[in-house]
Structures are given as structure tokens and as C-alpha cells.
Amino acid sequence: MSDLVGFLRDQLDEEERDAGLAMAALLPARMLTGGEQVTVPVERVLRQLPKELAQHIARHDPPAVLADVASRRQILADHRMTQAEAVTEDDSLFWEECRECGGEWPCRTVRRLAARYERLPGFKDEWR
Ligand SMILES: [Zn+2]
Image (cartoon, rainbow, N blue to C red; front, side):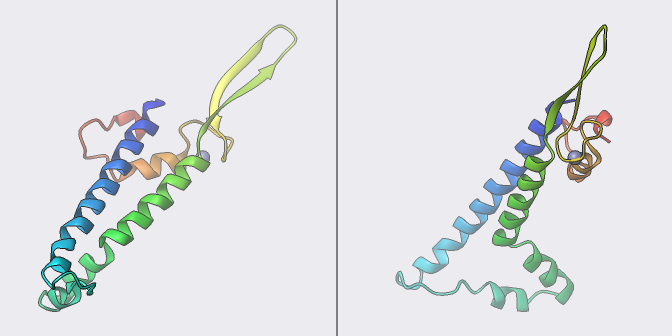
């Protein structure tokens, strides 16, 4: 079950890498202007698209994706697994729980973070 966190981190790494590549792909537009720092005319491109499509693209531009990835990384860091222990007269019991929620591991928050990837190869039914 603990490989859910590794799976999630891999997905966040991929999203971050893809957003970085998308930002790098915009750089040649700056070079075409003779090296001057200009605003890449994304807005001009978006104006030529249907409004709904342009709004969707604008919401998922690379800086927005990077901010979203950073936010989800922080949530994942907050909701990490910890070992819990209960000591009785005869025995000690150990189990894994969420450090933030104090409940089962992986907690509902981590499962919800993973839910967006349920159609990807490597996603396990037990993470639902
Ligand atoms: Zn939690």
C-alpha cells in the first residue's frame, strides 16, 4: 500500500517535467524577436480559439500547473504515514496511520489525490 505515495510522486514529477518542457517550448518565440524579452503572444493565440477552449488552456498553463503540483506535494507531505503503537500488558501493537489525520493509512486525502490518476497504468484498485 505504501507504494501509493511513490506512484503519486512519480505522477507529480511527470506533470512538473511536462510543464517545464512546455515553458521551454515557448522560449524560441523570445529568440525570434532578436533576443528581446517580450511577452510570448499566448493571449493572441488564445483569442483565435473558441472561448471555452481558450479558458481551459489558460487555466492549465505551465505556471498554473507548477503551482498546482507544488500544492499537491505539500498536501502529500502533510499527510504522510507514521507508525502508531499501542502497548498492552502482554503485547505491543503497531500499525500505520496518517500523521495529519490520525486515521487509516493511506488516508482519504491521499486517496483523493490519487483518484485523478486511476485510469493510468500502475494504479491499483486497492488505492480507491
Ligand atoms: Zn491524512
